[in-house]
Length: 236
Length: 358
Image (cartoon, rainbow over all chains, first blue to last red; front, side, top):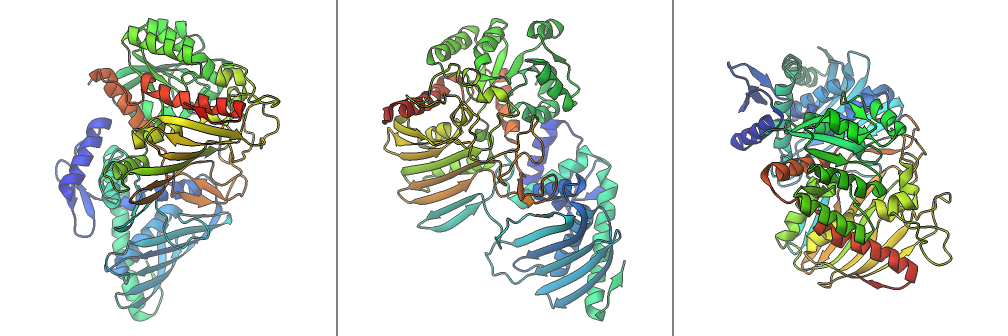
């Protein structure tokens, strides 16, 4: 897995002329190891196209006066607390403001629902679950509600993510959503890790930002667990 | 590899601005100059602040930058022949917009010019570098659908004529003023001329050529235009594959002078969708989706904001590879002739009211 990602990163480095670095496994996230050994946590959702476009929609003033983020993410297995912490980082990224307070309710490791307040006053709700059956594609939804306009990565009147290609044959239904010609062939979740590593190499200012954000995510995960255990909001 | 010294000319084509990022970022290129067709095109170009000097006279541009190796001809269709001649005389490689010419004699002279000059001439059909199309070709080539039986494809957009007026001019777009049909006050040169992609794609997907085509125009959505904005085509390939194409300007637009947010009235300003039926199954494909969506500024309308629009990266990569390694582009003048010929046959069918053999 890491070999293929590093091959893809080498391709981009050669093509666009960016400094050396290697993608390596980290404790929680993939990391970028720089010459000299310094490591940068990679936050691939921050370079994923749909979220980059959503952030542009917020930053450009297409939406005016954002009020609320409504996020959801479901998968087969995994830790919904960590998923929720990742979703909160996404909210912080889109809002350009850190998470200030969380209130969480959990059903063991099956589900985790959160209400959060960002430091700039915006509100966020996050629902995460791990009970999709094996083989089911992960689901998510991100909606940003503002005084002027709503933005989302899901089309109106749809409940599940759409795909670019639906293929019906005697083998059943296959779906494909390819997002990157240059890195075609890598699974999308790995494409975003490579793109994150490339972004961090091209913009050294990202390293401290992402390091702080990863630290905040860990604090959020801890706050989520404490809030759910104590049935009380936790201020970060 | 030594970067290719590249320039742009014309700057009046709707795709002009889509080259800026890749020409600036790709290390295999050194974008040295641009040359606008007129003062208005230069004014619009300068809004984008590329930092690349812009001239109004190609002779002056080449005098100032004699090391230019390649040019992107981002101009109106009726300028292509003279610009190709200008480049061929200087041995400069050419990246042409999607319609080199609809005049098949002129088209053949272009082929001759390029052959005699020994230069690369690539035609801009950017769909080939779209990742969804790449997957589609892979699935079909792997035989997942078996022998193809039918292809329905849309290449529908808003009309760019308000920002790029030459696209509403029969002479500038089609090259001549030819009525669509007896008694029809409109002329060739509209939506069909803007949408060659699906006519090209089906040839790649099937490996077959056109046999017959029947086309019909509908009442225009934009009554002011003197070119067609709504039409459909149906026909058969030589291998028996049936097709149905919609290359219309069926999505209304705000009449902006410079493309900007809020251009579209219908939420999705451009779509290329295909339905492909084969002996073993079928595929539905949206080459530009899914995306993200909003109803914010400037018009508070539900709007598709595209998340993938990088076709020009792959297109330029192939162009550079062909120049430096002496290769022939996939979409070269000779290949593309079959696509242009079918588009002309659509106009002939509209005029005749009957199917036309391609």
